[in-house]
Image (cartoon, rainbow, N blue to C red; front, side, top):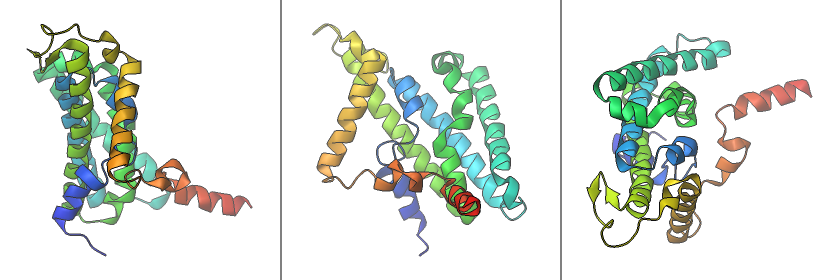
Length: 224
């Protein structure tokens, strides 16, 4: 059943949020989420790559041979990742330095490849663009939420504005990896409590959540 564009958009932000529901992109979400500004930077950069790659793959889908589609997808994603990396280096060097290696590593972000394989390759350019925007906004929302909590508790500030540093000593642990995992776990637990356990997609924990699941199944049957 074909979805309208508003449904596709809000699916990515809320119902199918890539971080909180599908548990994808957790590595950059935890690694760069020490400051709210970093979360916005990574989120917008990923949204740009999502939008460009989704549209390009939707356009080229009928041209790309099925046997080489995955390498072709990677080339497309790498192209848009390189473009945004150079833009950030030129116009936002502070964010480029803060994001470090995780900016070029957008090329291997499982969210982007998953949307290319599961959505863009099967839908129109317009729908693929809306899907990319929704997923990108959902990813950005997740990063900003996680990084805001960590920055306020860990630094006593938010977007560099002093909020609580003069009221109590910041908890530096929140800026370290254990703090990131703690905030991430609490948010996932809270989401599942509110949704009564229906938020996290069960298939995301097994082969059914993998973009290459169909290929693997086909290979297994062939080998058998």
